[in-house]
Length: 213
Image 1 (cartoon, one colour):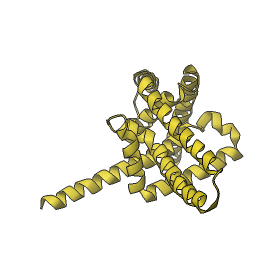
Image 2: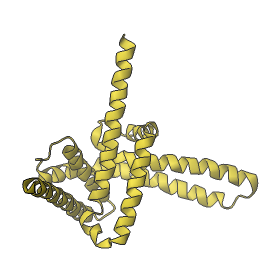
Image 3: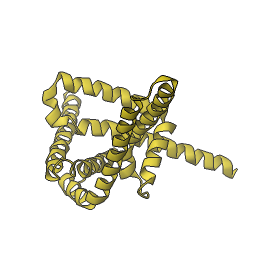
Image 4: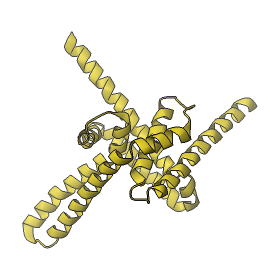
């Protein structure tokens, strides 16, 4: 009984240390890229490691893989980040312009824009997991992220709820943010997305099997 409790405590402590370590790496490498140019490659690097863990590859050399991925994906991931930033800025400008229009037209256009923003947020949540899991052409990452999010509504809702709870936990205990603020969120997002990827892959295989009969 004691061995089971101690074993569980040891495994839990190991995971806590892993999450704290990649959180510190994320902060350091984000600063290394002067924040704006460091945030996306650091996030891609962190998610790459988390994906390895989810696949059961827990012996992966963390710093080596983090540094290698950061260098390898620096330019491409920043181009993706700038594209996402530009879309968000355009949506913001659209909201500002619509605020100057009155009447029914404003309500109609606002409703359309809210739907577009909602789709953008779904795509935004899945974009990094899709980036590290699939090998696609540049603009296909956005398309696939949105489609996977829409095809996995239950997982998307679960992810949103857990992130909402996590947000309030970190607001209640802000001292946890430097240790787990990013890595814990990353693990939730990547874990949920990885489950969605596997579920969609299983559905595709079942469909192909049925069609082959």
